[in-house]
Length: 302
Length: 306
Image (tube, rainbow over all chains, first blue to last red; front, top):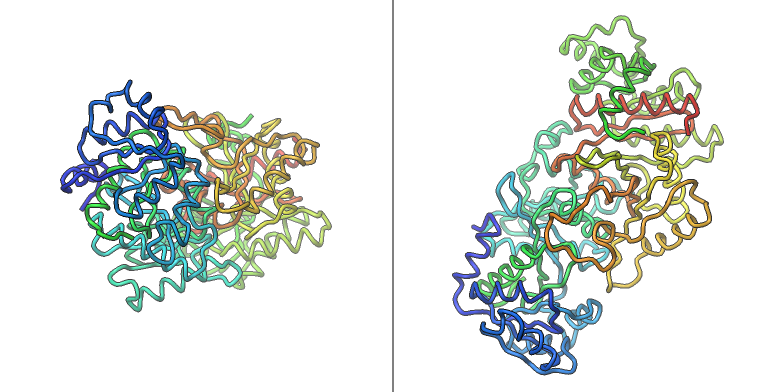
């Protein structure tokens, strides 16, 4: 079981063959991270775009002496997605591609990388106390998921939790309050999901909800509100009600708590890494390792 | 200018004791907080709730409540109505929630504001004290409005600006959060942000400024920023007020104090005084701090500090 980012990197390294990493529209700031990952030996970058421009950039960097490929393409994003879909790349990162173009290409129902009905994004956070990795989802992709989408988001997250070695994931379905209030839709969804888990509809996973943040984070706080659950104070996965909360929650943890975070798009045929501004270079490196680990462990992930 | 909860505590001792109604102090932590707040001179409590429970708990924490006014009432809405009624009739200047769901209190406040014709929107501000940051940071609305529209957001900001002015922040900076990304369509919260900026430019929000950007990344790194390492984070860039798009976001974010190195205190500023809104899971130290904040805010409201 991976409890730290270091262990994710270790698992990526021990996973066998190097993963081919599609990188459209390389930018200078990617070079250090790509060099590091290539040196560690878990990826071979496929640099997609104008060969001349890429060569000029790579030529001046240590990546020049490491294994990499350059793929000449006028539409780097489209080519990167195609290579990934066709299995010629194992991981896709956004690189320097425009985010809207990239995400539209990834999520395109016909030509994109969707595996099932829904892709979602999970942030993986490294907590010092307790020393463990936790998932927060969906923190980037789905705006206002309903109950059907939330089921799929959970299933995607359970896939990743499995790869991280979390055997019986405990899931906190977050809401503003811990009581079911028909005026607050997130409490209804959380209660339904909780009931579904009681009926073993998510296998060994236990979902508790609705939980407000104090009950989710602290067993003592939950007990004061009369709530007893194996999830309180010990969640492995935090399901956020919608994107307004998810996107800001993970950033609040990064900026106010300096929590290390990586993330990955799930529910796609291959791991996909969007470019988020609030990740440090160290976290971006771990993110590549996480994608390599997922690629190693899952023929089809998510 | 109040920069920390230590400042709040010092001022509350100076300005207290003030009469405060406690709604259902029927839990050891709440009773302990009331006891300590009395002992340090913040408050003179009026205890409203289940008499037997209050007596038992006071006994348990070694608090002689015989000298204080007590009102026996078991119905929760009535408990809340009584306390808020005393606030609006001017009998006291602060109310604090005890072990009672907050919805009862909001209902009482909303009714009382309507009756008073104040036109005031009820909202909750959860203030964070963040180590190294030279001001308190208010997350709002963390308690009442489930999905405020643009108009409600304007009123929520006005309430927060009013509180900031009471705390001595002359021109508070407001961060308006939205999860707008470069894909996924236009979020309502982003459209609200754009409108709020326009209102602020014309002075419609009072003396304050609206920060550029809608996420913590925008605030700390700039719109096109990119973080190399956590060492680059300068928390002093945190706005004085963070307007959240909805209740889920507000409540979930503000309670990160259980995980982060921050302290929280929550309150509602009504047209007639302060209502402390500790969470039912808060411990006595935290509740005591929130009562101190109520005392300081009530004092400044009485004196018309604005």
